[in-house]
Length: 347
Image (cartoon, rainbow, N blue to C red):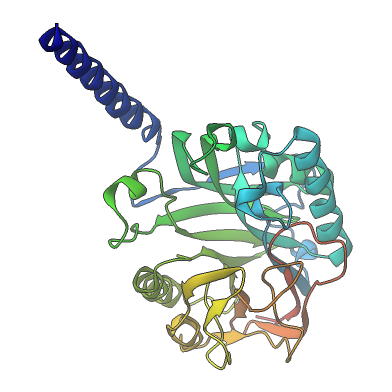
């Protein structure tokens, strides 16, 4: 009898292990594009200025970088699950904040495109519609059949995931390219099965007879070695594009070189920002960081900011008129947006 019980118990364990392996194999799949370099999806809707109209070429441009945290709000990843009404309320708030800023272009990170955690809302399309703008480009940076995070209880799992980063624009978008970055080698292999692909997007926006080159950035948050490597790749990509009408912006997950505190933040005590990512990017020939001043430059966490993670850089074809962090209440993400207004130099 004992032998029979042990046999059935062993069979049960084997079935459970096999089921778990099959589930993980299925859940970690689902990526539709695994190329290192690929075109981002560009969508144009009616109402864009004519691309080659000299009269439509602007003399000024306002840009914004905004990690929108997929519309969950400032509470963070562990605050879910969220109702559809909660997500829509925050998306409406994000759209209003972008519109009120006077931005002509916004580079966004952490945008859900068809994810269970945000009720399958195409957030880029929703925001584009609310803004009434004509153009967007999006690249997918996180796509899995099922993401079992947060780990417990299962009711909080993210589930099906399709998320990325996007540029929304008042001006036509000619083309866009996504440069996928390697996942952290220091991560356990099973974590990388479900980990997002950090990316650098190169988006070309048509300003009448001229082209604006936009690099939308979302660098590694938790692994300094990967963040440094990705910054080096960014410098290479920006250096390969000599246009004076170039702006580099996004969530760099890195601190300014002169930041007095580099670790031990109460909201994320385990992250060490002791790397030179921003110094490396700022040293790119011809690239200038916008001036935000002291004290008001903190962008994260949005409700009680204690560090700066979000930046805007530009080349000489854009002359800075003003730049600031939008910190007025209410806040709609865990990051505060950064907005900069430029004068466009005459060619």
